[in-house]
Image (cartoon, rainbow, N blue to C red; front, top):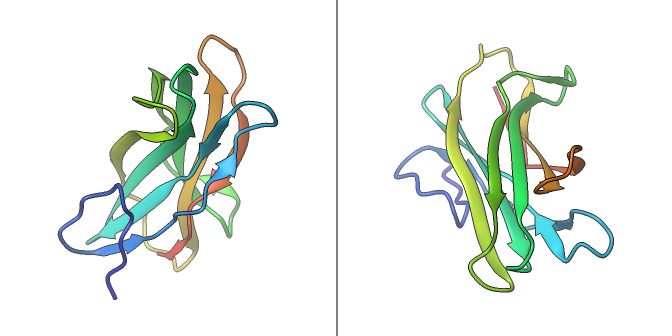
Length: 131
């Protein structure tokens, strides 16, 4: 079955749809929603932030093994990005990652911070793919 993420252009493969946005924090005016796609044995990872164009963001995404509760890729970070206008979406990626197939649930774990601050806050996970 082929599924689609509205921001991830993949011509073939399994793409997990995630149109659910979660707040990055009370009063921030920003929301995030990660997305993942599987093409062959390669994961495509995409971070998304939606909100105020005046807020500069750093987006952090990693491939995550939900069953083992461990990161299985390097962190991918896009710094100092913002939506083009209020309510628009800015993306980070897609980035590719591989991991051995072990029949565990894998997804993208995304975190966010306001640019210029030290710590990534909150988190959101994409729907998982068994790999």
